Length: 304
Image 1: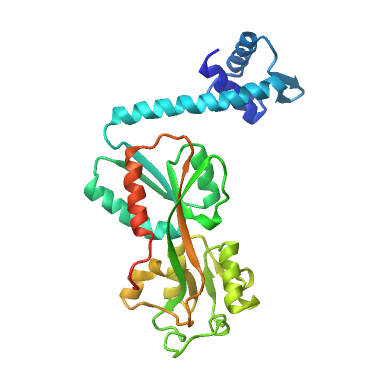
Image 2 (image 1 turned 60 degrees about the horizontal axis):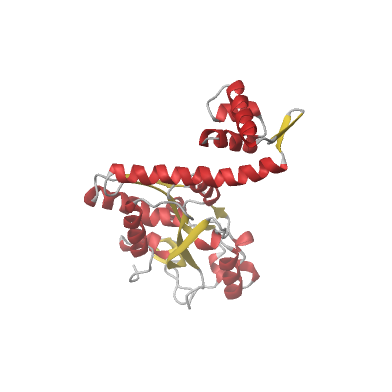
């Protein structure tokens, strides 16, 4: 028995097909069949039920695959640890960012690393949470930073809360609502297109609790997009009002291009950001640099 035999068994278990498993492992189908046969001979029992076009694991095959998966991952971690030592002090880092964290972190972190740690290889990728979780589990990403409320906890995920940032309603400086005196009603805001990223159920309940059923994002939001930067651009170019992290608009507010609308008491809408890593995975030293940078950036500072 060797590790390659176990990897071949897992490929077959995942695909249910000798041809697809062989393609995934860059083998001929006959070579994959010989590898599975060698593993069965070594264990003295059948691992695959070959019935029709579908190949299914026997009960023993399922038990072997479960243990094999852990062994293959442990072997990958050993190789990763050796690579980190070989590469030197900091290694490399591949991070996925949700929409809000992307606005707050991507450009500043790349600049920070270029200035202070130019030898570290850095890859920062924005994207949808669901896709990035797959990439994290496939080990093509080292960590994610996303809105914690949009994440379902799982045993294989380590979730570290980094900070919370308040949300608000903002519009371009020349917007008809920008010059209104006194707190605005939600009805006044809803007279214009409302732009937002997808919101968690908790945030939606906070909006409904404050403004009533008319503020349910399912019906109130007319422009929905995962990219906060794009929503801000839309608000700057139109009469749309954007509901987003206030800090994400800081540059535009400081440049007097955007204003935060007065709605009276602050609305109970905030993004709680978390860093997500895989349980049991060896961390590159550079990941601690990113963790500290993100923790400092993803916390509300003085109002813009």
